[in-house]
Amino acid sequence: MHDDSLHPHHELASAYLDGDLAEVERAQVHASPELTELVASFRTLRSGVADVAPPAASQRDAAIAAALAEFDTLQAAPGADDATATGQATTHIAPVLSLAARRKRMYTFISAAAAVLLVGVVGMSVLKNAGSGDDESAAVTSSKDFSAESNSAGAPAEVTGDRVASTIGSIGGDQVVTVALQIDDPAGLAALPLPAADADGGTQEATADSMSVEPGASDTLGTTETMLAPTASYFRPAMACLGPNQVFLADIIYQGTLAIAVRDTVTGVTTAIDDNCTVLATAP
Amino acid sequence: MAAPLDDRALVAAAQGGDRGALDQLFRRHYDRVHAVCRRITGNEADAADAAQEAMIAMVRGLARFDGRASFGTWAYRIATNASLDELRRRRRRPVVAGRDRSGDEGHHEPHEPVDPAAGMRIDQLSDRMAIDAALAALPEDFRVPVVLRDVADLDYAEIAAVLDIPVGTVKSRIARGRGMLATTISRADGNHTATSHRPTTAD
Image 1: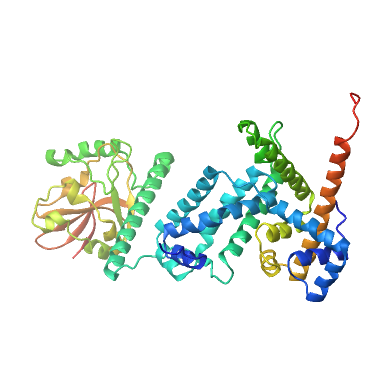
Image 2: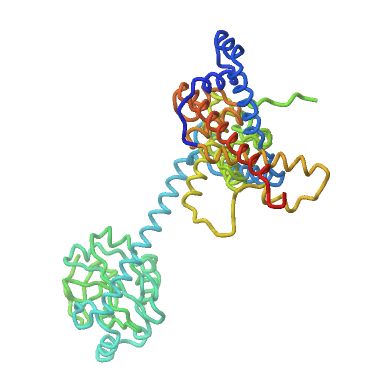
């Protein structure tokens, strides 16, 4: 079967069959009984090779249906119309969006990314704090400690009932996470904005809303948010130290000490006060 | 009644998203595509798979078809590649004992009703099986050009384009292939004849 050497008669007979011979060569074939017989043999062979049983109709239909399904899929893909119309490969072409729509989409994306990042950072800090125990910094205080200090400081009834606000909500059921701003100088203190409720002349009571810290605020101020330990109940002892015209601004860590920032609504002076009512800093 | 659209018009319509045109085009060419696959793969099951793969590949490549070659030439090129891919897959596929993919005739025959034309069909079947066997024994380099010439009816230049080989090579491979097929079949006929006429102990 592997005798594939090209016999000159085979080449002539094959070319004759395919109509690929010049007149002189055709005459040569006609004049040779051997070549004529070989041509007849090849012709029979060609008929046999071409004689393929037709496929079953169901098989034909199934194959065409599969191909048309693929066609439908490609047509449904974005940009398919453009691609087929121009005779180019099917590629995904981004839809045209107005600039406003693009910006809106971008802001949405940035907001979502910032939220995810914040949750991730806080979550990692929670895990870190939960596992580190005695190595925690001064900013990390257990709820038990705060409760004890609160009791010893004799916090007012209306304050002791408040839970410390969380900018991200509760984590793991009853745990509440507090975010404090790290501030190291009076300028940072002075730059703290009034909580929205207070700015509007609303209540000065330390509520969850009024104490929430906007993530963007820390960026503006150039400060760093530090998460306090998850607490079941965080009573802010320093709240007992507020003067009559002072409003709470934020939980802060001032030069490494847990404190609160308060502002006198009459003088505009902002003060950092720790849990022992010690004034750590004052900013006009 | 409107004259049927030619391939070029159907291709253009299909490229513009006309599903019906594509359906018509495929129905026009499927049997020939299947025949090419059948002759290259050598059995019905692989041919069915290859033909379907070829049709899907045509859909995916339709947007790139520029019409320089005829749709048929392009389609048979795709069918040839699909068949060769199927052969390569078959070589990697483990053979399951008790199953063979040797052809539809053998599988379907037991289900066919007996009728007066059965004798003639058996002769045809015998011829087809002989051709199948001879083609199967033919090296791929010779089998494919012969199939493209005799089944797909492509000319030498088209076959050269499909296989990306020179026209002279196409010509010589077809001639050699036919010569080898003729030799194989004549030997098989000789054996068959010798066997048929061999005296048995009953004689």
